[in-house]
Length: 534
Image 1 (cartoon, one colour):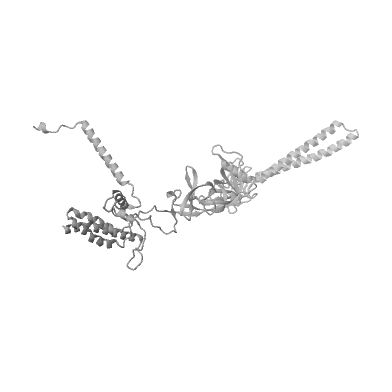
Image 2 (image 1 turned 30 degrees about the vertical axis):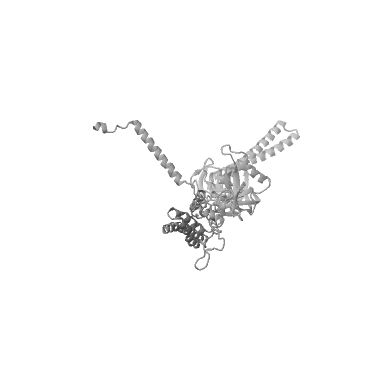
């Protein structure tokens, strides 16, 4: 018995079908939820207007739905504006530069010897020719004396040889001496003259080496740290020397120019313009020095695609130091009368650059294609598409489109769209009578007459509607005719207790309440009259 009544076991196919049904049910619920959340909103007439339309299509004696509240129109976007202005803008080139000394010299001794004296302090400013150190000069003084002695000896021998030569020539004229002796003496004189020239050169070298014992500054500049201390043996072969002098005034800044900007620079240089240069600190806020463009290299670096250039600065206050990194700005030329707008006004699309131009009278915007020009930190030049004096949108442009309504920060807030229409009426009910100008109170009593014949005799039908019409008519006597949605027409106007006119919303609400009470009173009065006749 249990085996017959127990349900069969679930197969794999049954489980799959059940899972598919559950998935389909979840999908259907998701579609329903999406439809309810994304259901299109009703029109400006409101939900009451939709009921009115249904009542108008349905016809019959029943009253249509009440008029809905007016839907609000699309809100205008609050934007910021700026006026296009004419301005003279400089065309400049910004680059990262390295400060390099105009001249750098390593002070090296030219003769070998013991460093006897140091006449400079580290970091001191020295002038060209100033004695910086002294090498022991004694050996060089001895060499000079030796060279001088050799010269004097040879000079004495030369004088004697010349006297002898003159004597030999006299004897030769008397034919008292052989000519060979005269020629030999003449050669000796020439030999001694050559020796004297050699002695003079040796003496000059000795004197020069003696002067080299005083190490002098080759250029004017600032001395670096001392490399060799006093008492050490130094020589011309020392690679580091004793100190390094760097010329700080004037000083140069080397920078790289992109190859596409080189023609622009060359055009300015050919025009004879002196290109001003300004060096800034790392933050580009503090100017360090001002100078001029100096030189442009003659080839492009194939690895970087740039050309090396140099600007020179007087650097009187020594604000620039060698190997310092600075931001350089080189002024190429100035554009006169350029149309300038804030950078935030320029928009981009697939078709190019554009701006939103404001129509101040209508408070609308229009899309205007433009051509971008030179830009500065906060403004950009527009070469075509805009004139000076026109207003462009700078804030809130992300929510705009061509022809969109906008409001400015100083504008007063505006109300929404017009109020919705009144409720529709049936074909033979209040909707039809409203079109003929019949008061709303009369339409409320008219449907009460057909309700009596169901239970009352024929004579009672003539008297039943008679008291209903006058009772309902005074209720809506002051109400405006149907179809005047949200407008004051005729002599009726809602006022407060102090006599001031009520706002539009409150007047519309009062009219709706009057019509609703009139309709409810007419429908409830007819059944009561029928029961009384019975």
